[in-house]
Image 1 (cartoon, one colour):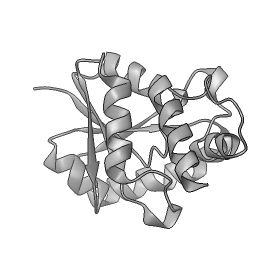
Image 2: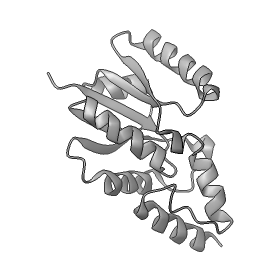
Image 3: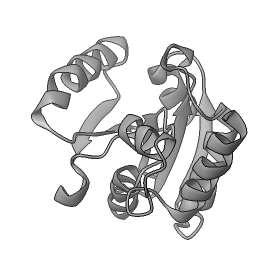
Image 4: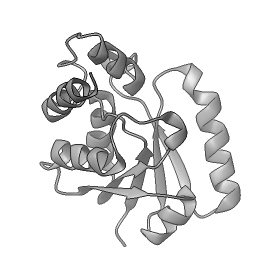
Amino acid sequence: MKRTAIYPGSFDPLTNGHLDVIQRAAKLFDRVVVAVASNESKHPLFTKDERVALVKKAVFRLPNVEADAFDGLLVEYVAAKQAQVIVRGLRAVSDFEFEFQLALMNRKLDENIETIFMMPKDTYTFLSSRIVKEIARLGGDVSSFVPPNVQVALRKKLKTLK
C-alpha cells in the first residue's frame, strides 16, 4: 500500500519554509499531495488556481509530490485521496496550540487519519506567507524567502494591484 500524505495550507504564497517541509515529507512518504485550501477569510493575494500553479512549478523536480486544491473538510479530502496522514508545519511554540487543536478535531472527525508535525529548518522558522507578502508590498527583496517562480509572481501581482 502506498503511504500518502496530505500537506494542506493556503500557500499564499508558497515559501521556502513550506518547500522545506514538502521536500522532507517526500522522503518519508511514497506520495505527497500539497493541498491548497480555499480560505477566503484570509483574503488571499493569489487565486486558488494561481497558488496551485505556483506550487506545481516549485515542486516539479520531486516526482512523488503533486499539487491540488480542495474545498470543505480536510478529513473528507484526505479520505478521498486515500491518504493516511496529514502533515502540518510548526515554526514555533506559538503554532503548536492551534495545530494541536486542529489535529485533535481531525482525529475526532476521522480516527483513521493521523497528523504528524514537521518543523522547517531553523533558518525558516521566522517565515510566514503574511510576512513575505508584506515585505514584497513594501518593495523588499524576498528572494531568500520564496522559490524563484513565486518571487516573479509576487512582483507581477503587486505591480498589477498598484
